[in-house]
Image (tube, rainbow, N blue to C red; front, side, top):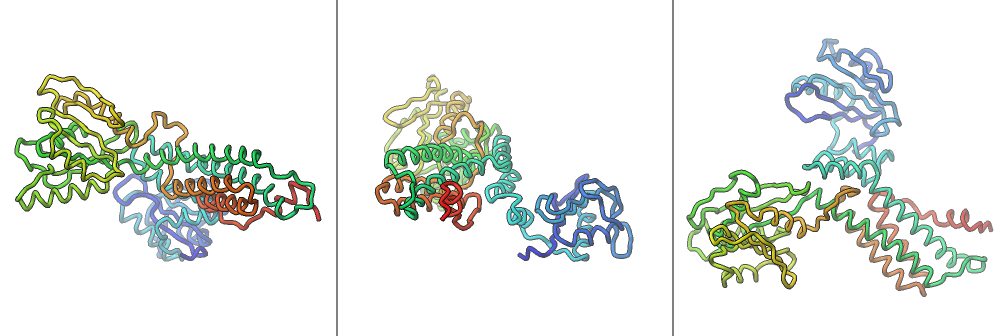
Length: 446
C-alpha cells in the first residue's frame, strides 16, 4: 500500500438498491471532482450534480459530498459520490474515478489510513469491521461503544496509572541523590493492587465482548435416536434437521445459528455415535468427533427411558478436557416427569422434552452460563482475542512486578512490559517519554 496515492472503492454493497456510494480518499479528490462535476463541492455541503464521463456525457445524477483534510474519516481529502444503486452505474462511476488518477483501494485501506492519520486508534479501527459484521443488536451496541472510544479510554486510564507508578520507580533508579519519596513496599503493592483490580474488571468485559463478537460453538452429541435433531429443530424454531425413528438418519453435521439474550450460539447437530459397518455413517461419526474438537460446549443427550449407560460413559471419556459438558435427559414427556435442573458435584444435568419444548428455557440459560455470559451486558464493548491476550500478559507482568518490589530495576522492567502490552491494544508504540515526565512532575531541573 502507498499512502500517498488516491484510492477509490464502492462503499456500499454491490447489487440493486436505491442509492450506491463510491468513496474516494487522497490528494486527487479535487481533480476528480472538477473533471466529473465541472466544479468543486463546498466542503461538508451536499451538491446535487451530474457525474460526467471522459466525453462529458452524463453517467448519472446524484449527490456529491466533499470533506477537506483533516476533517474526514481518513484524515485526507475525501469525496463521496452518491448515485443510483445499480451495479452498472456504480461501476461506471468507479471506473471514471480510476481514469482520473485514483486506484482501487485494498480491503480495509480507508480505515487503515484513518488509523495512520490518528483519526482512530487500533482498537477503534478494528471495531469498524465488528460493527459491520455484528449479527445481533447487543453486538452492534458493543461494537459502537468500542468505536466511540470507550474501550480505548479504559486502556489509556490504565496506562496513565502505570506511567505514574513508573515515574517514581525510574526516578529512584536514575536520581537517587535527589529528595524523592523513597519506595515503600507496602505503598507500591497497594498501587499495583488497584491497577490489577481495574485491569481484571476490564478483562472480564473484554471476554464478554469476544463472546458477543464470535458467539459460542455448541455440539449436540449422543447415541442414535436420543433426540438431537429434534432438539436442534426446537431451538431453531423450524425444521432444519430431518427427524425419523431410523437410526443413523443424520450423517453430515447440520449447523444452525440461534440467539439467546443477544449472544449467538452456533449449534451443530451430529451423527449418532455408535459402532457401525456403514461406510457413509462411519464418515459422519468421524466428522462428529471433528466438530467436538472445535466446540466450546458439548450437550450430551440421553434418552431418559434408557438412562446413562456404558456407551454414554465411553462418549464422555473421549471428550476433550477443555470442553464444557452438559448432560441432558430427553423425552421426559414419555415418562411423565417434569423439566428440571440438577446441580451435583460441579456437574449440571437437565431434564427436558425436545418434542414439547418443556425445559428449553432451562437449556438456554445453561448455555449462557457455560459460555460465560453475565446477565447484564451494559458497558460491554467489542473485543478480540488479541486484546484479551494483551490484558492477560499485562496482568502477569504486574504480578511479577509486585513480587520484585525489593529489586527496583527488575520491578521497573516488569512495569514497562505491562505498559507495552496495553499500548499494543490501541496501537501506540511510541518511544519511552518517562524522562520528560520525570522532569515535569518532579521538578528535577539539573
